[in-house]
Length: 213
Image (cartoon, rainbow, N blue to C red):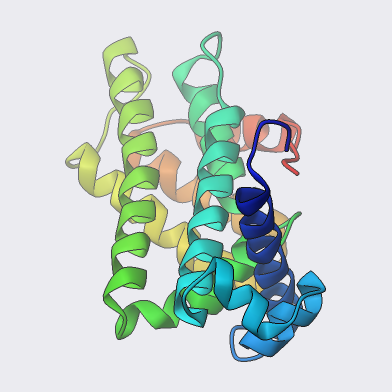
């Protein structure tokens, strides 16, 4: 954290502590006292850096969203064909947040968006960013003649993001394996975009998992 002020270093340590507690004990367990203990601080000292538990929670969710989007960006490269790029986004969108608890943290706090305006704003921002990534990949595939979408690309992109959201929850809950979920999403994408399912799935399976710390 070279170049950061001591205050910013401390704020990041508090956010990391909040993420660790939420991943381990759930959103309900991520109390101010628990976060402070994880950070090795007194509760009143934590409030010197963040005004409230709600502020800490929002910062933790934002940091987790940023990490997920960074992983999605890292998954694709300019030298990939549109079909391979689609496979990379599917794989990253489904598995990127599983190896570092990002997905678990985001799902723990997702219900807050039902009643909290800031969480709702962050959730909408994340969903829109995920959708835009798919839209760009689809547009490139259409231009290259590799994709033949069955309806409007923005609707396809949103549908794929929605499927990821629901199916990753199944993985976190232990109700489905990553491979099963990847097969389902790749199959759906192939049907919606006029891509050979087996070819797309082969690319999804062959791509390496890229880890983000």
